Length: 480
Image (cartoon, rainbow, N blue to C red; front, top):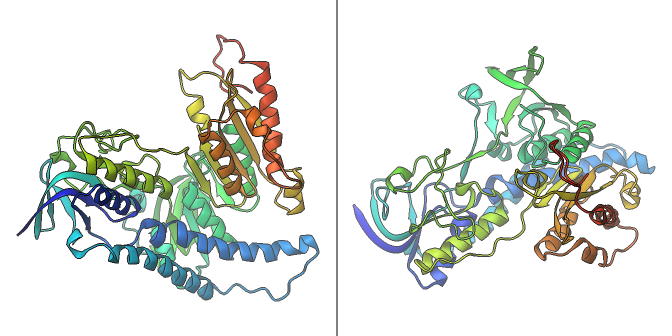
C-alpha cells in the first residue's frame, strides 16, 4: 500500500474542493485532491448549466406560443425533442470540458483517484491502495439527490434530476416529485417543450420562499400554467413496461393513480458525509451526521478539519460552494491561525417564469423567536409598466427594513427578471444601505426596477410609522 504525507488533503473535486485546493496551495502548503467519481462539478454536469440549457429551449418555445398576444403569428412551430436534448448534452459537455481543463492543470502528484474515508483524525485511506497522513483535511464531498424510500427500486423509469440530462429525446409525460428549485425549473421547462407534466408536493412550499404573501402569489402564478398538486403524499409506484403507475393520496385521504413515462424525484439532495468514516474523527455531529462547524471559518469545532460546499448543507448553491472552499482552503493552509472569511449576502434564484429570488434575511429568519419587529413594503407586478409591456406582469416583491436604523434587511420575490432585481437588492443589503439611501439611487423609465422603487417607497412609509407596540397576542406578520 502506498503511503503519503501531505499538509492539506481535500476530499472531492467539485466547486468547493477545487477552490480549497487552490487556496491551500496559495498558502504555500502541499495539497492533495481525492476524487472517487468523474471529474467535473455538479453544476457543470447535472446542475445549473444543463438545466439552464433546457430552460433556454423552453423559453424559445414559450415565446412562440406567446407571440400571438403581441399580434405576431408564427407558423409551423415544431419542437424537435431529439435536437433539444442533443444541444443540452453537447453544450453540457463543453461546460464540463472547461472544468476538466482546470483539473488537468493540477499536477499529477496532487491528484488521487478513489474513495477516501477517515481512519482517524489525521489519517485517510483511499480504496485499498493508498493511506494518507494529513496535517489538515477539507471535506468537500458534495451531495447526492434524494430518492424517496417508497419509490426506490421501482425501475429505470423512476429517476433523479441527474438522469434528465442524458436523455436523447423528450418523453411524453413526467411526474415531478417536489416543488423545490430543481423540480419547478425542470417541470416548467419540460411542460413548455410539450411534455405532459404534473408536479406533486407533500406540503405547500414553492422553491425557497418563506414569505406567506409571496408564496401565495407564486403558487397562483405558476399554477396558471403548471399542474401543481399540493398536499399530496406519494404512496408508491409500479413500473409497467415503459410507464410508471404513480399512487398518491391527497389531503382529504382520497387515493389517486396516474400514469407517466417517467417519475422524476426532485426531493432535495443529501450531503455525502455518511460513508467517509466521519465517526473516527472525534468531531461533534448534528442530527444528520454533519460535523458542527463555524460558518465564517468552515472549521469543524476547534479541529484541523474543515468542511465546505454541499457537504455542510449550509447554502447548497455554487457561489457559496466557491466561497466555502476558498475560506476552508485558506484556513487549512494557515492552521492554527484560523480567520473568518468573506461571507456574502445570501442570494438564491430559481429560473422559473416568473423567476423567484430571495436575498438577505428571509421572512422566516426575521420572524424567528426573539427577533425584533421589522417593517415590510411590497409591490405587485400585475400593473407594473414595463412588466405589462412585455406580457410578464405576474408576481410580487416584498422588501424588509429595520425599525430605527432604516437599514434594508432583505427581500423575497417572484416576478419578471428577478435574477437581476435580486442582485441589485443583494448588493444594497451587503453594503448595509438604508432604505432612504436606496431611494436616492437613479431609476430609469420604463424599467422593471421601478417596481423596486415602489416597494421601497412603501417600506419607507412603514418605517416612518415606527415599530408597533408589543401585544399580548402573537404577531405573525411583523411590520404589516
